[in-house]
Length: 202
Ligand code: GRF
Image (cartoon, rainbow, N blue to C red; front, side, top):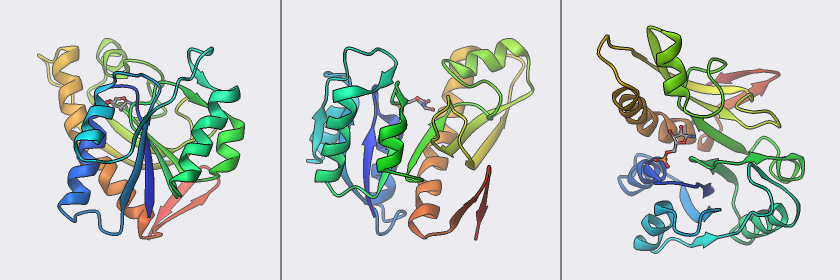
């Protein structure tokens, strides 16, 4: 299974996926391309160092979505690399209809909260401010909404009394790095079936 990773930032989740591929924990998975909408994003540097195709594609004039000509360029780049599964790893834009039609049921995202609680930005901060006792992360299929698609897997951690946004975020990220490769492995094995909002593993 060839995957294309889209990210806007530091790429620690990409690194976790790459490590799982290199250590053969993720078998039959190849990272074909990494694309970023941020020219100097560290995720591109990480890919270049490993000689993985790393591409910056400008997504302007929009700020929060991937649309119009830019959307077309992203789809073309993924198709050129024969990508089977699109993995959003910290990609800070909404994916729109045309993209989702080109990769129907084959776009996944990781979110640093137990969805459907705390969608959107800085969700670990939202969780801490709300006062929840458990936090975590979610891997889900992407539909047209904001962090709303069918859930594939979640990991839960307790919120500690002395947690700060930074400490909670760090522990959530550690879970992400475990959960994302696991979920990709399930998809690669053909173990994930979607039925409406629910997914079934097996
Ligand atoms: C992760 O926390 C992910 O949940 C969110 O964006 C962050 C990306 O981090 N969607 P990184 O670039 O993988 O380090």
